[in-house]
Length: 378
Picture (cartoon, one colour):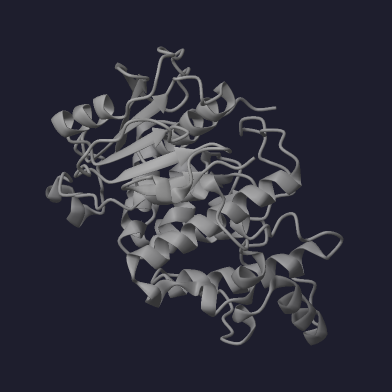
């Protein structure tokens, strides 16, 4: 096996620029691209996916016009999100890839991005499921699809110069992508820009979208809904197609508080803080600070993606007022408070948007005098 390619600053800048440009076009597609793990590989012609990760040839990516790179990445991320690798089964690979490309290119076009000039387009077929398109292409006869555009981008195995796979079962990977689709749908609905929302037009997404968002998706929705000012970009580079991550360190700040009075167990703490760290890994402009609290506040600790969770402190009664006093002093953009809800609330609602994260058995929603309530699952 070839050694994995390093993720260079230049590669990170290319991917980050694409994510940020796409954010200005479509909240739905931008959320999917933020979710995706994009890995450098010289063994793909331009890009490809094994269903879990997206592989991008760094030299090819650097040579592409920005909008072409955006379309290429979105194309592969959609293949992964729609489980096009895992759903093929025993079907002939070339024809399956052509069917999947036809659908995905329609979605890329809906995002206002270019598709390969030689790619086939069909307004009717691209709104169907990939299985239906495969059957239609099979009925047309002709060649088996090998050798056409995009035949090599759905990979049976990762490139040899890629890091090892996570080892997750295929079903788990598919469920995670379904949750990403749910998050993307939620973000699109909040943006109000329904013109780019493909869910009403493509049977692929209608069929695969889950029935509801779980608590993790709701947490992502809460953290991502605060408007962010991207004015920190150096405008001299925009005309050259370069988007540098000159984001203000405080573009979005979150205060995360954990009730350590004894009513919240360690599993709930790990679940919430770990998920917040996941958001930090996907959204580099979000910064989070952790406090523990009983009748006092303990901290702060800077939360970063991949760091160990600090050991809890405290263990007395429950008083929410010290944390809200800190929020008043430091003015974070959002406040997330993990608690069962049994404690002393401030007399006046705070100015900061507040999310109460409540484990099973906690206070009913109507008992919280302000803020939104998110309930951890049993």
